[in-house]
Image 1 (cartoon, one colour):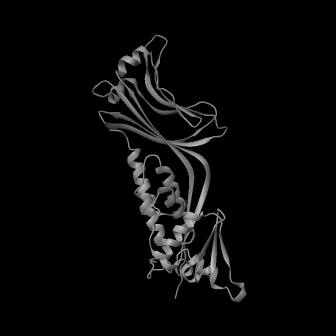
Image 2 (cartoon, helix red, strand yellow):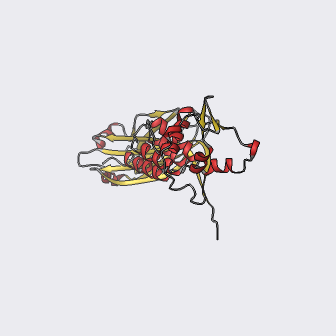
Image 3 (cartoon, rainbow, N blue to C red):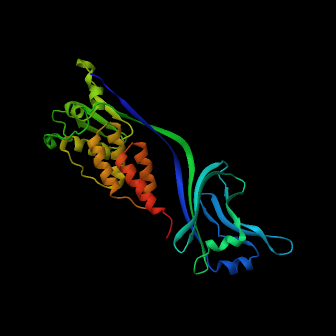
Length: 312
């Protein structure tokens, strides 16, 4: 009988997102006034600066050159190069008439990236019926080092686990307990080997080969706080989660992934997914990637796609 063990590794990098809309009203008049140069305001954040620049070149005689161009200017005060992916669209009457996506390096020196260069006589195809030009800019910038997370999908011993009995009468009680969990904040929780091993293949492997006096008297949960460890045990003993605050669910997701409690992990994904917002979506996406939370990863990705879709 074959025993196939499947491993999945996710490589990712910390990123930040920016969304900018440049509306140039009465474009043709402004262009004439500025004599060919038109700059957006600076949009800056986290020691990064960006600006959109539209230019129609002139000959010395004052006539238009053959081409008009759009550039994005960028610079960084972080003393390192940052890879950046942009998507820039020109909207005409709420419809995208031009889109460019590319990747380039943001450096400590001010740099220009050309978005388009078109014959000046064709610029009208970018001008709306109200005389405006609308440029929508989306930026995704790598701000950290590449990281990897590995996920092991072994046999189905732990999948579909659901407590069959109600053990709330010994939850957090010393009665009949035979192991102590030591949490990151120095607190201790009494627990029962057989229940931990039945729920988690990680605990089962930990306890399986213990014999006689060599039995582990305590388990150090050095990266899990007391409140998170208690909720993890509550699910093992009762099949329920009491604290459903977002910050607690995020910590519980990490703990359930570490101890391979797949059903609890699924519960956490549902709780976190129901609390997605513009403020937390990126952090949730990163957590989903790190812990291979597939449902949550899809939900966060779909949420961000809607959040950063071109303005119409």
